[in-house]
Image 1 (cartoon, rainbow, N blue to C red):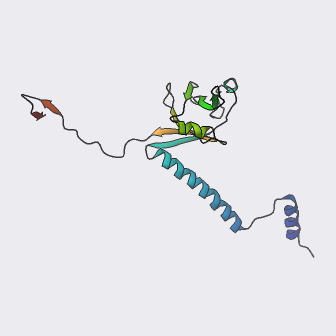
Image 2 (image 1 turned 180 degrees about the vertical axis):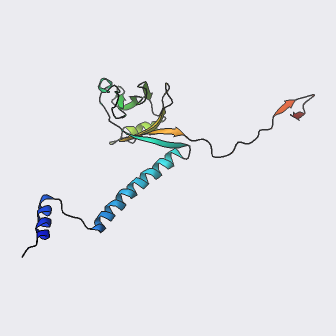
Image 3 (image 1 turned 30 degrees about the vertical axis):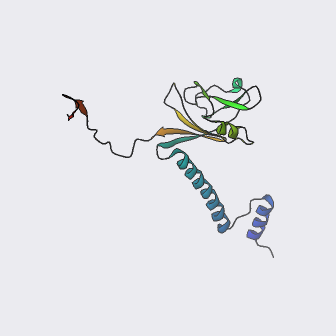
Length: 174
């Protein structure tokens, strides 16, 4: 005879809502946490200890600048970059608008190696850009963008001995 609990479990299994054992849930959780830890380590390796991540924004690549939505009150912030191609069809620049103040920002590659990375499929992109109109600083990757804030220096300031020129060539300490 089938009990009520067994019947319920059978129905849930058929619907795809069966219970999972604790070990598989812990394994899934550890995999997710491991991926998050590796992503944080990658950010720290790239940014060093000079920046702190304030927020994480989604990145939506668009084919045309006319499709960039204007910021609206209450809407979730996102980054909408566009690839600008040169005459040969290579990705030459990135155009986007600041998620904070909506001012235009243009980014070019720093080297031919970086531009070659942009033209791979999928592109290898990792840019840090600051807005000229507001104090926003952003790190942009293929799928995510990070709002950054500059960290103050962790080393104490040292007194700098100032010199003044007196008679002749001898420096005098003030």
